[in-house]
Length: 212
Ligand SMILES: CC(C)(COP(=O)(O)OP(=O)(O)OC[C@H]1O[C@@H](n2cnc3c(N)ncnc32)[C@H](O)[C@@H]1OP(=O)(O)O)[C@@H](O)C(=O)NCCC(=O)NCCS
Image (cartoon, rainbow, N blue to C red; front, side):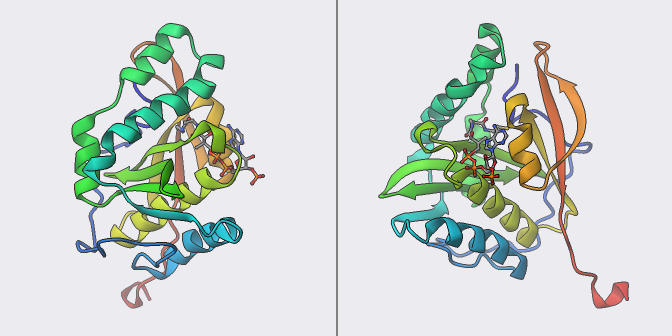
């Protein structure tokens, strides 16, 4: 079974059509990421961090790669075995693309959340898809997943001209994505027959003066 986050959810292979090539080296703690609408993510994380001054979301680097892969494994193992067969879980865990992770890191499209310098979550985007959203299992239910999702969506919104972001969603996370504004598009089957959801979130864009 392909990874829930790597499954192709895109109707096309269109790239992200990046509008802003250069981003700051580090977004630092709660620093804006280049677009007014990014304030949504910043506000969400601010709310979360009010009592957590030691939290920050920053760009991932190649040095984090092994840690991210291990976090992914732990995060999926916490819930996936309750919803998928042992074979499907094994396929899920094996299905990630290191080259794509490196590409996302190089393009500053992969983010890490850290608490006291410990990695507690990741998220990012590739082409027109939300990718690699994982939270450290001991930190589930603390707002980290939604803050990371909103951060990646805001960055996507700021740096592309796309009107929607897509996600291939593992079945148990549908409610989480719906709470974060995604809508169900279709039920899909991976190559091993396991089910996942194609979901999509509209990106609000204000009309340009040309649009009238
Ligand atoms: C899915 C995941 C990212 C959620 O992260 P999280 O930090 O626990 O989520 P949050 O605390 O930000 O939750 C935000 C809201 O979604 C709800 N929620 C979280 N997980 C949920 C789930 N599996 N189903 C339904 N609702 C969920 C929370 O209760 C919360 O609701 P509230 O605002 O009403 O309190 C996390 O469980 C995870 O990493 N899972 C393993 C990896 C994975 O499956 N990634 C997604 C692949 S598609």
